[in-house]
Image (cartoon, rainbow, N blue to C red; front, side, top):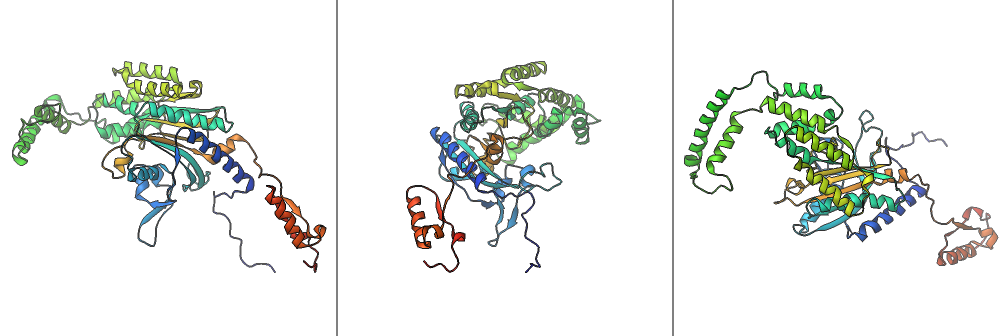
Length: 450
């Protein structure tokens, strides 16, 4: 009889996994757990379902727009996990990871919605992540460990041509700070780095003009000085009368007068258009530098020097690379890209993507340093932390293997064995010896007794 109902199909971009795919995933997972375990990483597991707030505190719009979020019966706004890092950091912080080093690894499914019209519309909405987080140690030695381990794990799986592309948000932000521009201006430039990398300087300039970073009317020096004098007077009055704060009190390494003057400058001046343009020019050149580690670092120093900025800013990056080499990474498989923009609102220092050979169409994973995450999640202090994760499905695809399930199953025919009971007994003995065996019930003759 024909069913009148249409078959219930898989959701778009969701994938089934059969025996061979699961065998390959299991084998890769066990191998990577062994590699990470030898470096002192222990397993942790967090819920698949978490409060949505956990994922939007730090990640921003890029990830929040891809959440599977809904209201659960208890009234919480929840999401299927799109990644592990935030939950692992929450777990570590709740369990006292405030000093020393904590090394945790994890694996499991993550979920990211992608509409067919999106840039990532052809990607699967569920995939398996396997990664590790190193909580506690600061850069650069810890950064080198994580980069080296990401390559070491892929080597253990047989992917010897894997390589990483390293960027550094800290270098970019420190360089922009040298121009004396506002935090708002720095944020604008950093979030425009992808456009600058692709040579779209005019597009960024037009946006900057629309936002007032390059205004048509500029406050002259006399007006700015008058504004500062008025603001200084107001601030001093508030400090001495409004809050009862004496200007003679200790205020760190700067005198109260210096603090007042600095605040006055910030309040009386918009971003200097000339400084903003210099910062834009520097970043447009820096963001286009990519290539072998040593060559890119040298080119980065040249751009900073030409902009009148200390080349010492590159030292943290070069120290990270040196640490990775000490940890066993082959630097010929490490490139530097100052225009690497993925997750730039999330990371605070080094960040990197992982690729198979020269193919840069699809990453196998990535990671970086995110020292501000614990405070963003509501804890009372920042804990240095970094980590990375593989897209395990992409890794297995890059291996080009067709794993088969372990040994073939021996089927025992009841008709050949004499009875179902005898066939069951034979299959039991084979399984007891470690062989896969099952009864072939389809070969049972109709009406045959036991």
